[in-house]
Image (cartoon, rainbow, N blue to C red; front, side):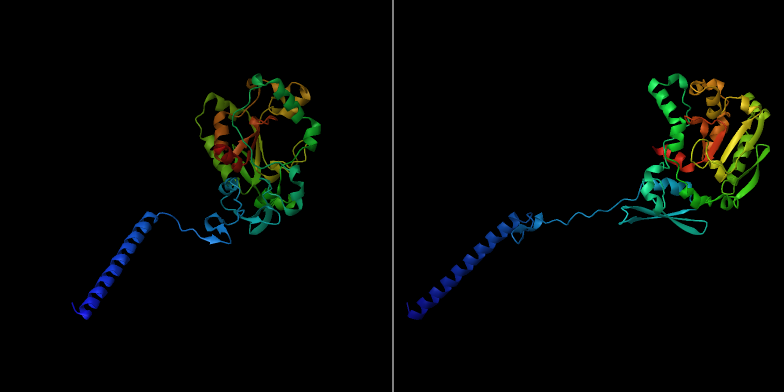
Length: 328
C-alpha cells in the first residue's frame, strides 16, 4: 500500500470517529434536556435563590362594604370614596343638592374632620332592625336590667348620639332655616301634614295604598278613630341630645283619638308606671294595623313600635337600615 493511501485512510477514520462522538454527545444532551424540561430555571443572586425573592406586601385597603347600602338608599346622591393615607380611614365625598361634603367613614358614622377625634360620641348609622315586636312575657331578668339601664335618664342624657352630618348633606338640615326651605304640605290619610320634599311623593303613595286596602274590621276601626297625623316639628328626642327625625320632616306620627289615654308611647307609660312600663302586654298597646306597617316598610320607613323604647305611633324614613337588615 502506498504511503498516500495509508494517510488518506487514517484521515477518513479520524473524521468518522469525530462525527460519531459529536452525535453521541448531542443525543445525551437531548435526553438530559427532555428530562429536565419541567424544572424551572434557578438563578442565584448574591447567594439567594431567585425563586425565594418576593415583592414586599403592599397594603391595599378595601372600600367599606356597608357603603353600598347608602348608595342603594339614596341613588341620586353620589358617594365618592378614597382612602386617606394620613387619616388611615376612608374619606367620603357626598355630592348632594349641588354641593360636595367631605366626611370620614369612622366605622359607619360619616363624621367631618373636626369630629373624627370624637368618634365614640356617635353611634353607628346602621344596625340590625327587626319588624318583630319583642314580647315582654319572654324577657329575662338580665334583659329587664338592661332595659332599665338603657332607659335611665342618666344614660339617655350621656350616651352616644346619632351622627347628623350625612343627613345634613342629603336633606340640608344644618339648621331650622335651611330645613324649612324643603318643608311642604301634603294630604295624608284624609288629614294633612308638613314633610320634607324628598319624601313627599313616597308618603303620598303610602297614603293612597293604605286608603285602598280592603276594609277589614280592624282597618275600619283604624280609620274611624284616626285623630291626626304629625310630621315636621323642629325638636330633639325627649331626654336626649339627639335631633328628632321630626326635625328633618322624615318622621310621621299617626295619632288615634284619645291617644293620651291609650298605651301608645313608652315615655308616657313610664310616668304612670316607672318600674313596670316595659312589661305592659302587647295586646294592651295601641298599634297601627299590620298592613299599614308593611306599606310603610316597603317605602323605606321603620316603625318605632319595635324599639325597646317603643313609640307605636311613629314611623321614620331610614331606607339604608332596612336594606342593611335584609342582608345581615
